[in-house]
Length: 129
Image (cartoon, rainbow, N blue to C red; front, side, top):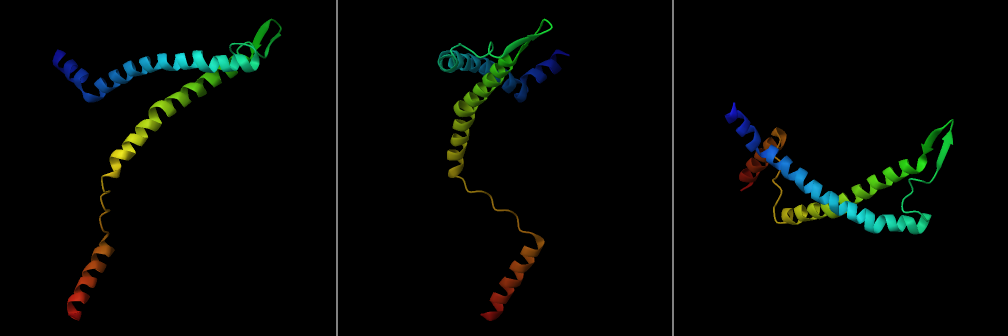
């Protein structure tokens, strides 16, 4: 029983997932600092409030509706997605592109028709000589 558990834990994808969770948590702190230190002050400068969650609140029959909190959540999602894309995905794609430049792509295998045409061409060349 413990041997199977050990094999499961030591499998590559489980270890990679654990590393991704730890790195994701650390990156979350960077994104939070970016949003709190740069984005929210920009919003405060534009709207006069630190965030827009209090904008657009209204009450109907003692039920409080908050359009601003929905907008704030959507903006936070966009900010996080943009930070992940521009600071992680895009640089890694550029790095992969640089690594791939030195490698030639493997040619696609010839189809049966192409192989037959190549043989015919080669036979015709030998006859002409």
